[in-house]
Image (cartoon, one colour):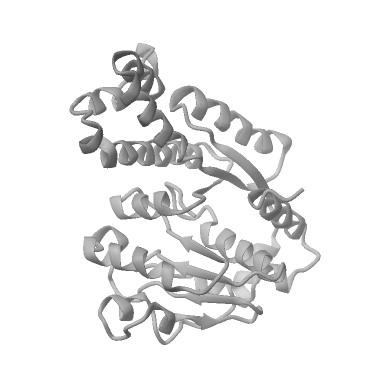
Length: 290
């Protein structure tokens, strides 16, 4: 779960998608990687766990499994983020690799990563490492702009990771810094590479196509808010050549802040909320279940 702006509901979405999957019988681990600002545990209705990611990175525990904290929901466990001043932007390369490697040690059906806000290299790397990267945004201009900025950063990071073995060189900066007004976009850059070197360009396009991020619009109030997702999908395809999959929206509902205030999981505290159907529809879309 990523995005360019804080306060758009990433932790809420992570928590409740986790609950939905657990209620379907899957074993789920939700990991709070908003290091330094961890609050996923609150959305899941539990106090700050005694052991957090800091303890694993600082070798106070030897296995990431030691961090698994049960929640009130069967089959759902949480790993809390650091409760100190460790920020994900300051995470060492060795620590990032340690976390990514340790994920394979978890005996679970699904792992959900709550990345928090921002576009640091570490955040982008965790986002790209996921089988499905999900972006949450609000139907507001500043939030939408930040979502586009996040997508561009992911795109840029993807190209950077491929730069050496594809020998793209300085043309990457030229392609990414192009402006729409110049009739040159990142998507045009890929087409240009294909024209000059079809084999190289097609490899590049194949890697970019693997991004395929998902989009959730949170706190919608009108049909126009819902339609924003379809507009973003079109723009991402035109500008980046990326297939942005609009998997659903979440209605604005006052029960959200009530559940947070009570420190209770939303879907468990308010089972009749319209958000129950919203989340159920999104989960089925993500799992490709009709």
